[in-house]
Image (cartoon, rainbow, N blue to C red; front, side):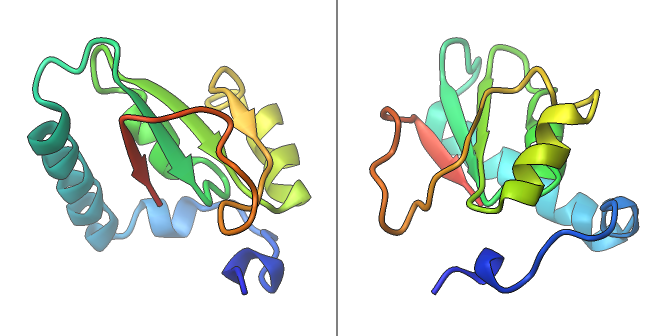
Length: 111
């Protein structure tokens, strides 16, 4: 069972975005992506699975040359993600990654 089926997004993710552990997590994601994809990342596409409010996708948008896409199964996440000014330009697909096929192949998947 997917966690998003039980927990809806009811609050903006500002609290978690300001948490010091989030900075460490984001740094770890970028470190692992660069180790996997190499640098520069020109032309590489990453899917942020379970994007929620898009905090990780927005962060990854800052990596030069990296194309970022996002997905979540929750329609409330899609509503928030596609209408938020900082994430509305990131392609979004609503699908259940445990049972639905991916829309296309990706160079890396984060979640």
